[in-house]
Length: 200
Image (tube, rainbow, N blue to C red):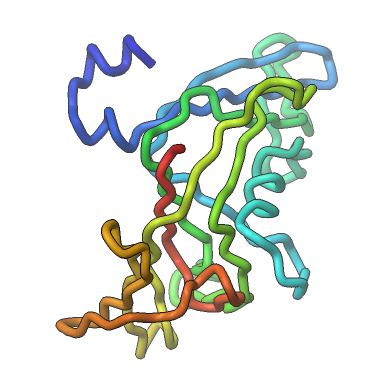
């Protein structure tokens, strides 16, 4: 993290950049390790599930072990074969502001893009365990802003919701209009698209 900051000194990176540790485990027992910088955490929806999941659920799903399928074989540098490997992701460096983007849009082909309108429970607080034993202090974040996309790809509209710093009320920002709104964490949303969490 420190090397990255020295190389690319930027207040944007200081606030929003995190680092992801990734490991790919080959059946031949070779392990490939890497660390990648990120500004946005992109979260998938669980496949073929209509259950209402929370943001914390999607994070846990993202950080769980992933078995790469036939279409995503990894060419191992030791055995030189395209293998069905196991992929592990862990957040290594935690940003001050965590931006989460839900993968609501999926390209089916060159001409077709579908929107996933599954409802999501927005957690007011999320946490990350710093090791698998869960005995150490967790890293916690609190939500303060949301970007929503309503409608379809052809006739869609973006709005935002922000938590007031002085009065702790939630406000809806819709073009030039700003007005009080309900706490978005009180009900599931099919429109939430990008969420902003600040580290506690």
